[in-house]
Image (cartoon, rainbow, N blue to C red; front, side):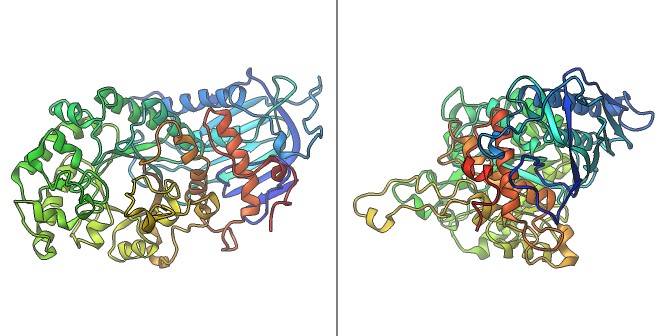
Length: 571
């Protein structure tokens, strides 16, 4: 028996990965085969409640997880030759005496909360236990349908495809796993304004997220460059604000994406950033936006072209937002508990060109910003949503925010500490670690006069953040023990100046897996040390192979020589 825990390294030269690493994990060296005739039985969503109206969605979650389990095991599996010495016979022999998995029993020992389709933080127990006996009995126990789903996900990671035929096997029996997440918010932020992402790509992102036990999709759907979101009461927004007519998200698209995610245990939090990052509204409502498309001096008024921001003291802007949210929020309410109001990178100079304000003095602007955000938050809360804002609203603008507001940090670890010191819940995602777009170089062009000063054209957050750097990030760095509960988790971010559907997979995966494990398992091992890259690397390489088998164009993190030869590539 090989006992594997948070203290003990996984064998680097053989495939036995589970990603994210479980809280407690033991495995053996026994062989089990599995075929498509194996039955998966489910007792239902709690004693006596299976099939009742309130748990209909619970049964859908589990049914979907069962279908994905069969699909992963038998259609989207891989041959692990990269994890064994070259030219060796590593696969077990399949004979008439081989032992097969005989049964897979799913036992949910509590009822799902009534909000399982759009769970609030802390309302769902995501833990599970998984046992696989040497004789082929499999049992997964959890308190929720989401926990059952995660247990099945882990189960599929124990099995491999046989290169000589259709067999699927594990060499790890018996297995015992007890697992639960460190943080309740484990997210990925995808920007679909700067470049459009078709629903098929968004579904694929969610599939990969779920396979890494991530549970929040932050949908940064609009920004300065484009407004692809259709609002039926205001069709001109997308008709004029999208890049082109076929790059729009209809209400049906939005509903489909939210529902797809909910079946995977992923809740969507849409962001409509404001008051900055709203220039695309000027294509249909120019009267609402100040400092729109100032050129060539856009850098004085915005971080990116086209410049523009909501007028800060305009009743017309307030009327617009009320109409926008009256249309959008009721459609989202059955599908999510969260909505993101943005609030980052507000450019003060833009208000010099705002006739409702006419100054960039913060003493004048701050109470107007408070009034602006108060109005937005009040409408969200009246509709039953928990608001999110970027850290600048609290730490730069010094706004008074409702206690339930979630503050998303991105500028520094110190920001996280400041947010929780003020008693607010925080999300982490320091751009120096978890911004996936960094290191691509500049996306803007330079004149002959400015080129030399900009050479060699790094972007603002270079260099590229490799998986090891992302893996080293501790969300609780510097947070006092009595405030760690206020750190809900965090997100990796893929801003899309240079990321479109062609390179989206490679830009996100498998680096985001590193963030996923930090958020599920914690940044530290049981001894309080940063988790070992040497033991993580083969597990991540294996997760990459599993993602590729699922159709994700995830980039490699090393070469086969390293995965075939244990720790020879370690220093």
